[in-house]
Image (cartoon, rainbow, N blue to C red):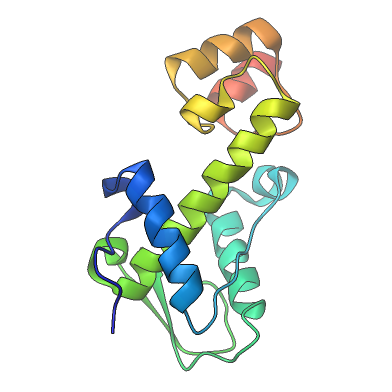
Length: 158
């Protein structure tokens, strides 16, 4: 039975995402994170890196899923059947749960990185290209955690 309140992580408040994160991770049969590093994103592009991160998450589950549901219209190569669902993060509870786990985990990582890279405001904008973030990049320069393939960063280093 799905957890009440699951939705696309982008449509939930930070407080609600945090609350749901705890409930999801406590009640889920299993869950895992997959990630692609900045260097991988720059080398293979953001879409391919996202698919790679999905592969890694499924591989880390510790169980063999009968099927994987993926938000969007692209599928990673998996050892189980998979189905791509456009808008799935709002319509499929398991995809909503995965999007919440991913968003909360990434936001928490941004808080840690904010301490490592003071002045960029990572705790506030969570790495999104806000005006404040772009101004900090101009003022302080590009760090190892910034994607060189991202157009605003590429412009600064070219």
